[in-house]
Amino acid sequence: MRPLFRRTQVAGTALAIVAASIVACFSDRIGSATQPGGTAAACTLPAGAGVEGSTIVFVYDYAFHPATVRVRRGGRVTWLNCENTAGLSHTTTSEAGWSSGLIAPGAVFTTTLDAEGEFSYHCEPHPFMTGVVVVE
Image (cartoon, rainbow, N blue to C red; front, side):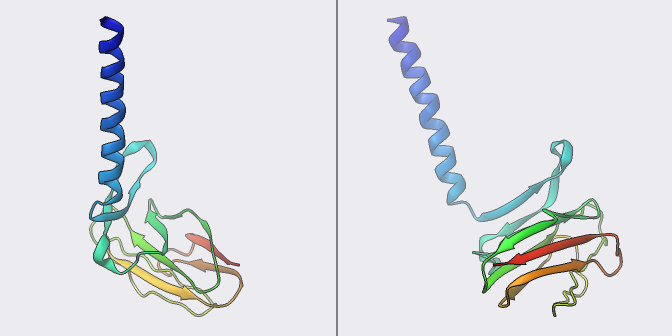
């Protein structure tokens, strides 16, 4: 009987993992960030934020994560400021025509990209923060 019990326990564990995955898919959050070392960033995207279908760029530790993203023409990119320090705002600014203004911690900025190409961007207050959006 022990082998049967073990199979049942493994099957129960597998079922719990599948159930947890399904719940995560239908949760009220569509994104979150984990900082290097496993520290959770101070942000999540509420499902009602109007950014569904966007490619998400998390902003924390004075950097854009990921630094390069690819989207299809007509696609949207959303930047989410995940800095843990209150008042540490950033921008996403490109000569391609978008400028977010200051994005406070926990806030988002979304833009739609209609032209194909490779578009560099930076943070106005922190010009060493750079990223690239490739539109295909």
